[in-house]
Image (cartoon, rainbow, N blue to C red):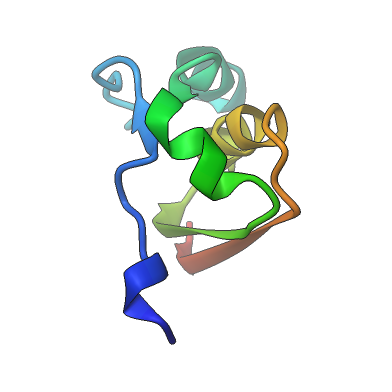
Length: 87
């Protein structure tokens, strides 16, 4: 693993997430919509790359889906997901 390629800053969340405890699937999806963006200065480095998103706990997948939508709008080769726990 080349740690120089680890990047935790390029994908940013636009707003403070709402508390999702008790929210149903539709509410979680609504809260996650358009909540991620890519740092403009990171776009050249992301072009053609394989991206891995890591989530500690996935409940409905809304947050990961919104993050993937933001990434898919850029020239990224592929997106893989790693989930540590499924709720």
